[in-house]
Image 1 (cartoon, one colour):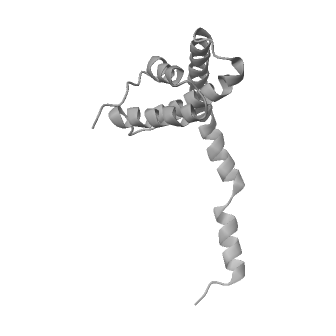
Image 2: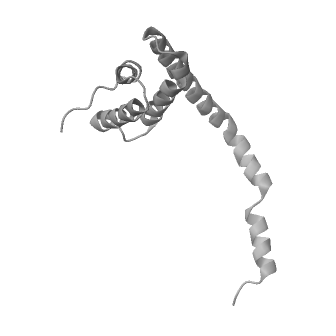
Image 3: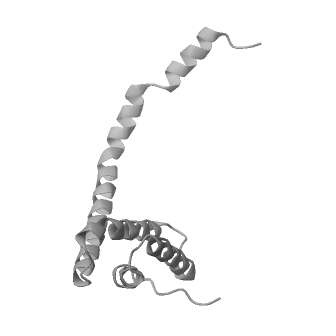
Length: 125
């Protein structure tokens, strides 16, 4: 026998009690905020280090955004679980190729890879 529409609506209302959801989120919020704060601090530190390196290489400020985007992509890769070693180095090399084709200096990109992220060049297969 099928459940009638009124019973389904009552079940749905019971499952989606917003007060219960709000209470659960309120309990998790302090830990979530701390994790977010730590991630933002690490990201900002990486961006500052990239800017310092770009300044040392005399890169034009108009190109900073592109170099920072390269750094952010490497940062995102570095935070992934399960990618390390040669796979990580290969992924970084692909990003260098991508951003080099967009007009950025491959030497500067490689320096960001090694100096900021401590990723060496990929080894030959």
